Amino acid sequence: MSAPMEANVMEFLVEMTTQVPAGTTEAAVDDIRTREAARARELIADGNLLRLWRPPLAPGEWRTFGLFAAPDEVALQQVLASMPLHIWRADKVTPLGPHVNNPATPTSHNPDAQQFFTTFTVTIPSDVDKATVDATYAAEAQTAAAEAAASHLVRLWKLPTTQGFGLWQATTPADLDAILNTLPLKPWMHIDTIPLSHHPSDPV
Image (cartoon, rainbow, N blue to C red; front, side, top):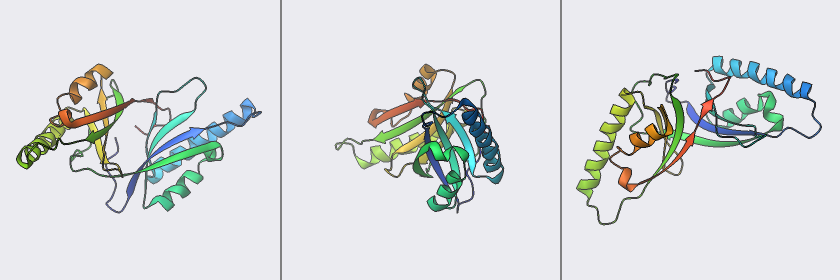
């Protein structure tokens, strides 16, 4: 996993959904795929494209998650527009902010593990006192550091909604569930998980 870029560079999650126009020949699709892969390599070299994943796909669906870096969203849109598939694609951009529990050092990629996105929504019960809340968040930070050291937690970000957004790796979905159940904040959290699979142009 690429380390976070310089402070003046933002990170973005981009959900890219491609719709091939009816009547397009297979040769035209193969050509644009080849040019897309070549452009992806250039963006990786330039430091704009950090990761690529495939989410679960329906039959015939063409969708990709990408982690991009750019100075701002205007610059990101220029990067996205430079990709050959952009003419057939709808892009959903989500800015990713820094999270206090993001691993201090890059977590080693485990080629034998599956990766997952998690979205954390925390709702603190109204009857919980501040001291308990503070202690639970402190314990959460310690657990996050331990899971990063164990190569389970890869990255953590803040979404614009203030929800937490994480990248994890585990041998199986059941193993990930067991890891997430150890989080001190788990009793106050709703967790949405997206399993990810390998993308052939992923830099890692």
